[in-house]
Structures are given as structure tokens and as C-alpha cells.
Image 1 (cartoon, one colour):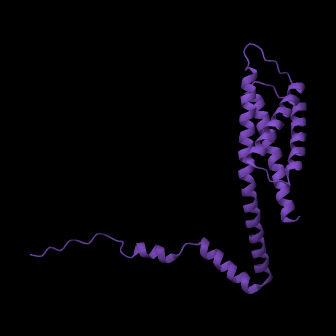
Image 2 (cartoon, rainbow, N blue to C red; image 1 turned 180 degrees about the vertical axis):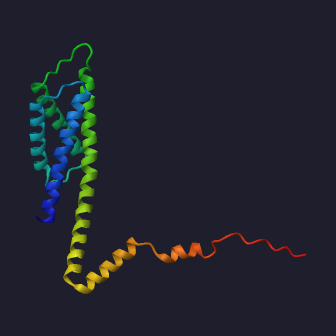
Image 3 (cartoon, one colour; image 1 turned 90 degrees about the vertical axis):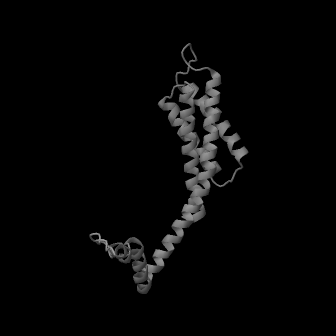
Length: 177
């Protein structure tokens, strides 16, 4: 899989997971029920939305607007698949709207920041794998790489000796008379 394709797959999975988890949490926090059928539909639609967004980079405003629309759609889906009565002891419609808007804003923050992080980690992993392949292909580099890894992992003994040179019982003070 090419690096660009790997980034798109990771981004699609991130969008789908963030949207599904946060929409379910927002719906439950607003007093709505979660039914297994609704859960399956939320996961399915979140995956489709994640795949549709995989190749695009969206601004904060567009991403948040899209996620709010997704929250609304998923709310309607969960409303039709679960018991969702707003009666005496439950939260009102305003609490549900606030919970979904907060979930959409949090999803936008997660997606925008994690998108940058995915790019950094995949480029780091590609560089590390390339370095290991090069080192394994050449015995001289393999020995040097192993020496550097061990030097970084094992603390220097000179640091230990410095602290031990003057250790021992205290010297009795000598008073000049």
C-alpha cells in the first residue's frame, strides 16, 4: 500500500470512529436510547462518510458543519430505531441538540489534530523502516546500527564511576593548632 493510500485509510478509520463514538455518546448524554440496529446503522454510515472524506482536507468550519449534519442524520437514525421518548424525567430537546453539537465540535478537533499526527507518524515509520532495510542489507551498517542502538540503550559506565570516586566514610577534620 502506498503511503498516500495508507494515510487515506487511516484518516477514514479515524473519521468513522470519531463520528460513531461521539454521536452515540452525544445521543446517550442527551437522554436518548441506543438500539443495536441503530448502532449498526451508525457504524455503517460513519464508515461511508469516513471513506468519502478520506482524500480531502477540510477547514475547521467545513469539517464542523459536516459533522453537525452527520450528527443530525445519525440522531434521526437512532431516534427511529430506539425508544426515544422525551417524557417527564428525561432531558429536553435542547439538551439533545447541545450534546450533539458538542460531540460534533469534539470530533472536529480530534480529526483535525489527528490528521496531522497520522502524517507525522507514517513518515517517521517509513523512514525507520527504510533505515532498517538499508542496515540489514549491508553488514557494516548493521554492525554500526547495532552499536549505536546499544550505546543509546545502555548507560555509560563513566557516569557511574564519577559518582563513586569520592565515596566512603567521611574524613576526620584536621585542626591546625
